[in-house]
Length: 393
Length: 221
Image (cartoon, rainbow over the protein chains, first blue to last red):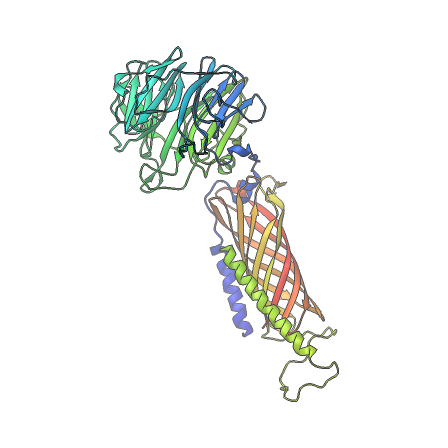
């Protein structure tokens, strides 16, 4: 190679270097982003790949499910709860499918976790066992669920405004029950063995309970709950979660990328898209009241009702202080309930968030997020202070 | 992709070692004081493994190097705060492929491409792929050679969904042991400076320093 040719190549290459060197428009640089990282913790081993379905506090003890029931006393570690194995005639600690706290009791829907076949060769794992309540986490009393239609099984529990609800399904029909004393009674002829999807959430708006159920929506008071019309614009509503706050009104998440609001008439956000023609599949909504500010969180999942999938993106957050659902725009800095966006990037950003819980505590509150196959995450807030950031539980 | 690159590195290393062993066996077959074979061409290169400081290289020679080792992010300087910041990048692995072309018996220029993988405090994966123009000077004391070098170019960096292309400067030296006239093996030490600059977000302007060390296999062309 002749020297002048070599020199030419070097000169041309150096001249092109500034052209090749480009910076993204990301407000957080890569090295500065990494430098801002905080440890997200190893978390409880049993939660690592679990999909928790609920988190409820009874007294000073928190309960959640990761297969079986787990409990944690204040500032302690999560420990496995030996459920009502004997009471249910089981030999294996049963799975906690769903749970909720009302009044002074924790109610849990249990299913069999016994993977060994019985004498007839039948494996009963996953079969519904019963709904039981406890006031102390050790003594369990079974709830009378005899009103359950023969073809249906109890699937989940919800609680709001001090009222416990249980829903059941079977053969493309579902029913809704509420607890009176220790007995579950039908919540209304409008939802007794009617065709519906999974009942996915609950909200109390001060005058009625609301239950989003995909292509159905139910509302009313116990004993008179009936189906309601779904929003029609934008089309394709499939309701997955509900939340009520005085600042925002009654909100519903939907898998068509919309947040719908009901105040006697439907209004909606625009279709919020992950990318063109791929709307966010919202899984849940929660309005967080922190200090003098409010934030709307909308969990997103990576799958739609059909087989189409997108990358998991955690959740979207919105300013709920000056709330206008028709002008809803996500806060891309993700700093309303975290110290910085870096914390979001290193925690929930690549997970499907199936739900949230907000548990008040002395001098603050703790947010919980349920990640599909990604465990339980928490984010603590101190009144007048700041958010600690998402960490694995 | 990294598996494919590792496979290529391994194959090339084995090829170089194969040449080394075959050369060793040829030399072992000759008595130490035996005259050169009668059919040796007058133009054939002289025996180069001696202890003189004479360079065995000449204009037009080439070196193809494969390296693999460890990388350590030891410092991060933020220009906005004029302070050193936590790097939060754990030690990782790196690999490189380089070609150097001798312009005379001492001076060589060439290029290098490589990559490194590190995990971070927040359990993300940091990937960096420098592409550099290099210049090197060769000091020879057979069977050892020392090659200090400097390189400049760009690095493709990524973490999570973030991507960046950053100016990069590399300063280092490689200590070789000449196994035979076709192959050398060595240890490399270098410092990699990566600047990250943004006109839109000047608070992100920073300089990161990585120290790398590893083993190198060289095939002499």
